[in-house]
Image 1 (cartoon, rainbow, N blue to C red):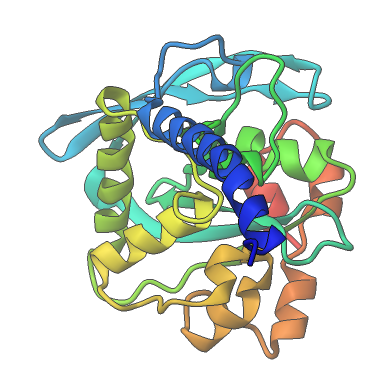
Image 2 (image 1 turned 180 degrees about the horizontal axis):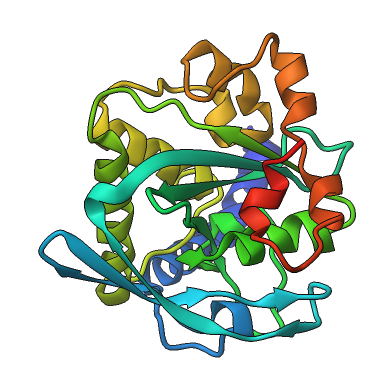
Length: 284
């Protein structure tokens, strides 16, 4: 009796399947062979890497961004150095930026450090953008973007979001720091990672190496177990309930009231350009 036709089909399909598997293997090998680099053609606002220089109890942060943004494409470029005593960190602020009102899962998270003299310095962990490149979360899974710790003044890092990104919705919360000295430890943890990226660049990854996963990593380094695993870490737009449940930010009355009072976009737009931007957005 002749062999079934199905057996013949399988025989002829085998070389095709082998070719597909070979191509997939080559693509995967090429993917993992890619190395992150600090030597690319970057956009202006990602051009310089910050660097922390320690001298006893004092640190000087080089290449702090202090751009004057009129729009996201129209700005005056300015880079400054910031010197501070490590013991002078008094508060940590948490910024949550929703990119679009109807996409509540998608958001960006930032920390800002306040010092004894009232000055503040923000750090945004984000994709380091190459000239002409556009961010997409799917591309962020495949070694497309490097990671950068952007240190900047609040009028730059927060202002560009509250004043220039018309679709976004930005919230500012005061962080709850448990244990004496943990403000300084968080600051130092950020600075060490900032320096590490100079010599050992890393790939951004939409799931494993983002703004929020890194913030959680720093918090848990300083205070082990403070932030548990949660979907909100992967989808930071869902983080307000996590923040409330784990006592990570100051909640006034109810979460809903806090979310309303923490919105700073309108206050950012009304900034007079003269007084300190950080002071202005904290007034009500």
